Length: 59
Image 1: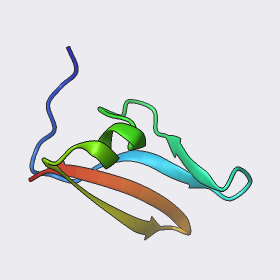
Image 2 (image 1 turned 30 degrees about the horizontal axis):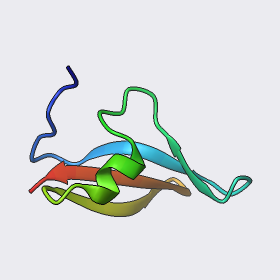
Image 3 (image 1 turned 180 degrees about the horizontal axis):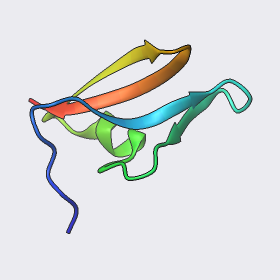
């Protein structure tokens, strides 16, 4: 069973300009598609060192 999400932000995907989509990050607890449909998950995108990251946390 996967680990539950915590109140801390965690990275689940990195944006790929070549593929024009978010690629799942190694060790991510959930996929971007799963995060999009869950009511109890907050999402945000941040840019760190020029890389766009998709992060989630439990509400």
